Image 1 (cartoon, rainbow, N blue to C red):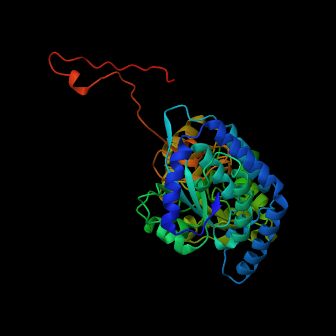
Image 2: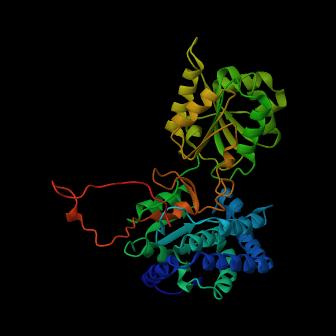
Image 3: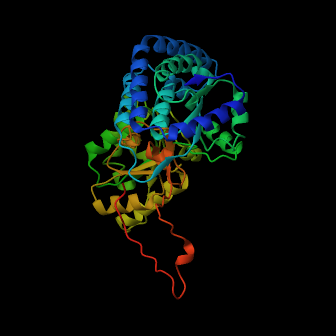
Length: 442
């Protein structure tokens, strides 16, 4: 890994050359590199966390001045319980992954642009090395000190390995990124990780394929047959486990028959933990009647735009699903699905129900990368899926969708071992006949 001062074009060329060497590096050499990175980061923990504390202090003042969002500030802090350990464990988990079973090959050169989230450097370095891809990384200015401290530890680790120095490169200035986004001759995939604005701006400024999501606008639908305690537990976790995460729920859809049976308990649990509830007319009326006066005063009326907003904070929009009188459960479900497919960002959506048939229809009909039944939207995560870690969550409708881990960073090639076979021998009246059968791969 190198923190380079080369020109953007030199950076891209060097990465392209390094990607060829890394692609043919034996798996044991890649795994040795990951072990070295893990060891070096562990040894540098004190200096990295000190650098991160400097970034957090600077970002806190920027947030207080209105120059930085609270969601970015929350994502920046490496001292948040479990975050450091998860970053290091992710490297070991990637190391232990089996190489993809099909004839896999790396994509080539990845350009990763991210805001806050200093752990992304370690995550992506591990996945890039394991998958045989070269990577160029650019962090946000709010994480500069953390970025440099982590990069020094990784660079020190890689010097004693077979991984080419230019396989993982770091750039600092925004001008470098603007040029790199034009280097489609050398860079094969761009992965932006951060705000909606970052992802959309990146897509607008490059001809290179972009893997990413623009929003994490996630929804949960509660059907009246859902278990009450399960519903309280799942909704509370989905919203408040980490509100700044892209897989945090933002909209709660409630069947009208669940307004009195389920919503009061859910609302109480959320309000007691400081969550703001923005309710449509039906849910506001139901909760105002069911809740004690001091809690009902905390409720707010929802605006239409709340159902299209990624809050990334302890705010939840609530909307009632009102099927026609005498209609079936499937009609109510269809209305919920229609709302999600119209307003969701196709990241992660869930249903809470005791009906296997309704859950099956929901999962088949919702057009999102991750679709769950009876579980928290926060489960949409590469580490929780067993991918070791992830480079991000893709809502694109391509081969890599949802949490993108090792296999999402590989493509495939067709390999033929022949002995003088030529196309002219086949076809025609007297030609050989094609025979296709599955054979074991060596």
